[in-house]
Length: 389
Ligand SMILES: [Zn+2]
Ligand SMILES: [Zn+2]
Image 1: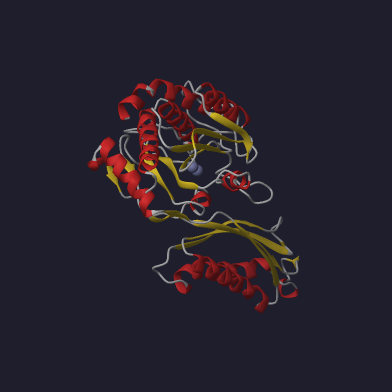
Image 2 (image 1 turned 120 degrees about the vertical axis):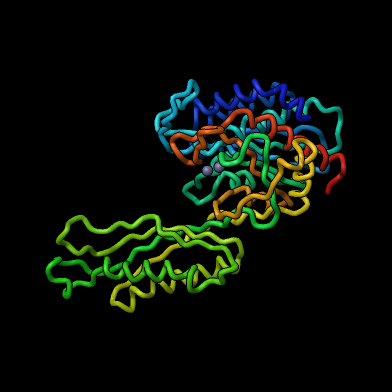
């Protein structure tokens, strides 16, 4: 399988660089999904378009079991600083997370699978829009695709990969249990009463109130939560005032919270509310709203071990390791709520010039593409031929 994937390297690089050159942000992947649909159709896959707005589903084979393999297709609102021949042609939009590689790899999977002699069951490819963002109603691409039936008819296993610019090419990382953080957003306004900067005693200064609230918010993880439960509360945006001598009426605070356990999510919500109550005891008031985001991604042990064994057989035991812990968000967790599944990290490091994800100089080492395609395709086929786990 790996040899056959290596034969596709040039083709996959072509796909990847084409997607990279013409990036599109979440729910606007019109060109990308048209290319995906055309390629799948030409390879003999059954294609469903406009799934979850701009998503595409391809199917091959028939009946049960069904394996779903997912790739996200969206880029980020970021101006690319690289000077390569395939640098972004769309101003202010860039594939800075590697989703161009994910999309190319999944097209490689389509090619590898269609060349298989018959196998039982169905392979379903999920080309997902908008992993990085949610729409105005708060749903990301995974949630929109699920609403449009992406996981129907009994998906037995869902798998995916994410490239990692910190891991060398030819290596993967896979583990089981919580593998990314659940993420919610909070939006708050601290309400005071503005007035003259020289007469603070006649105002209720919301900036003074917010200082106390911020301390209380930063105390949640360190003073309120069990240190063995991973969690983060971060404030990412504060806005108030326009002049140095005017005390404003209000302060706007936006933040994010991360967790892996539902009970911790509940506790953080309660504690954030309590932190804002401090504004009341100091004479002000507040409005607080939570936006529930994506759940934590939990890697199923059976799915993760199947990926691991497949990778060990294809690339060797020494090239498979456990991932570092982290609370980054990944909406693939929406799929693994509905079927046992797992995501692994695929090394895409550019040796001697390591790039950061979500940075304007991000890029992928294209040598990684065949490894990703081979491991995904082989894992899916092993599952189907075995009739499940
Ligand atoms: Zn990202
Ligand atoms: Zn990503």
